[in-house]
Length: 352
Image (cartoon, rainbow, N blue to C red; front, side):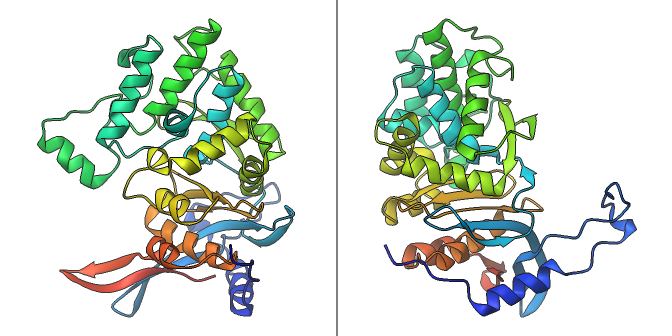
């Protein structure tokens, strides 16, 4: 693994300039704090350039941790709580192991997945349900189409319809149901924040992040959504790659890294990164959240404020380069071309 590199002077000066940008005016809808001051906008992390014209900007917050766990770069509000969305899934998967469920290999990777809905994902979900005496009707995640656009077209052309198994969180829900069945916990209401399994997961998230959960919401799949800061999220991923072998955290990290196609899919950045960068643990979440840890303990986490996934790849690639990780896979992840007709006329690019 290449040695970590320090942020360039350009990156530092750009971050400072972005952080000091004027706050939005009252007409922007921004809420005021107790003193009546309007909070400043987070820094610009990516720009949208079309035909040489600056078409838009994506703001957000980002943190990089060094191998010793210290903060090496902080852009924006990295301690303010956010909903990590599916970036919390490794912690949820560790929770089902703590509950005594025996999973390993592809099955454990799928328990931590936002899978693309490809045939091998759907087949393994059905296999896992049968192995634990469960049915697809017991899954509380909503019916959906494959997450991957190419797979979605193939699925629909073959007559496929929205299905709970096809929903990208179905592996996680199957594991949760199986953990409940093993412990004699209620299967109905297994997503209630007060359910024994969800309480176990809640405690695990706090332990991994090193901070209390700031808020509890409901994720798109219906599961409890636990808010922590980006620094806490990066710490959690760091703790997973540094955990002792055989612990729930390390078992999840090892399964994800060994079987990344089950965590994401064949055409997804998380898969590419975990395949091509030895020891990397990577998981994105909805609303443009991303967390990564390297095997030596370096870690990153960020969130794009407007939730735009088109900015995720360029920001992730630039953050990896600042950590000393480069090469074809990083270029592939960072490529976000804009087209006009059939021609490439611009790009989304990181600017920190």
